[in-house]
Image 1 (cartoon, helix red, strand yellow):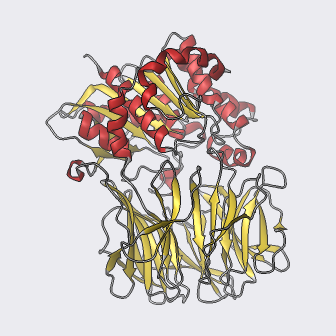
Image 2: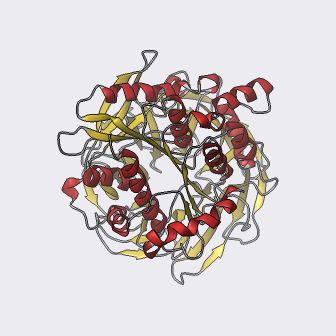
Image 3: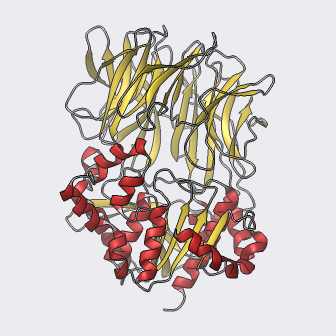
Length: 639
């Protein structure tokens, strides 16, 4: 493998950067071909990575305390907060990040949390006793467990797992009160996950995920193990299903019969779905219903910003919560009485924090205040939205971060993953550093195929239309060339996962217009990606990209794969990957590095052996970001 070939040549690079790199000496981090990252740059950009976030993980039934995830060391861990702006009591002290956590819904001193090892995404569920801090493993310790759901009385927990065959996500239930092993209650084919339990504890909502444009809801009788479909045709996206006050009504989000998602209600007695609340030109992206069934909290995705609405379910009227900062809202939860609501708010100029909202008054109280770190917050920038017409007249948009000064500024085009993802105005340490310290502008586009702009827009890059989204990048390059404050001669592309593919494809399609590209955990060869991605993901990705087992589609996928056109790349190339990546195997990085070098290009390579699909550890992010800066500085040097 290429990784083995690199090791013998790594150590010549070591002396320039080793003093500031934890893990370098034990071979955890491997680097080849990059310019040396000065220790000062690693420390400087590390200050921007010190900006912390606190995200709501769970709210106690009475609202008197909450769990948040935040990072004080290398990885994000679970903390307990018991008053507004109160002390964060750390509960988990793992070397690996904790992905999710939940307090017992009956108010007991019990927490369930989810974690993996080395970014392998083979998540396990653990139970913690808050009195003794004792932790016990709930799942099998080896298989993948994605989602779980606690019954309202906290006596049982449902989860999904691929333990049966390594592929299909079956449904399990474990009796926490009575003890005993988990019971597989439903064998499925595909990606199924448990949703909300009914108030009586006899029914469980299940979601069957097929693609971003299609998901179905089922109702499981927990006693008999029989699941019944409750969503109508034709194909639509159904999700975020919640019960009302009793077992009679279900609320969910869907784009059924429309281009955008809205709230629907389902009457179990007559089996009829009906729309609820006002129509909008934007997607409703999340939904939480209070236990009394009177109020729903919904987040509307308005051009990438998340706007929190409170909906009176009986009257169908909603109102916007204006007492929280403008940003992206997530992690929403009601108290049991429905009088208060906690929500995470993420902003581009600060990390995420949690706010508590009085449902009746609409007022808010801040519960966490995360440190901005050793930075002057006034230098952090908020983006503006720009819109351009693409090659076929379609309008696409982007967030533009502009540094101070007249320019012209070098530009980094940062492309999101997915492909069904969306560029959102979250805080980015690398973006803010490039703006404030290097004078670069950063353009973050939402090309066709991005989420948040309706069902039609989401489908515009499917199958044979794959490279139309790459042509959208060309339209943004045209736009950059027309802006006097931007330097069209110094443009780089940056992206992760599917965004990594977009970087490679852009370098192939626009070799004379780009100075550099940074491909992070990206797809270089669609055929080998589909053949080698984890079995539980293969069919899901084939819906989006096409089935490589079909000869005609295989030929098309080969045509779209940048690895076969590496000789056309004229720009500097930096490839970065995590060795444990279960989504995009590290072989994709090895292929494109080998192909670029065989074509005579100097491809630079970064490998973190203790990471998966991205870099979760702060020390790895600090080093990677510093290397990106050194790479860009070298690429932009000269005219």
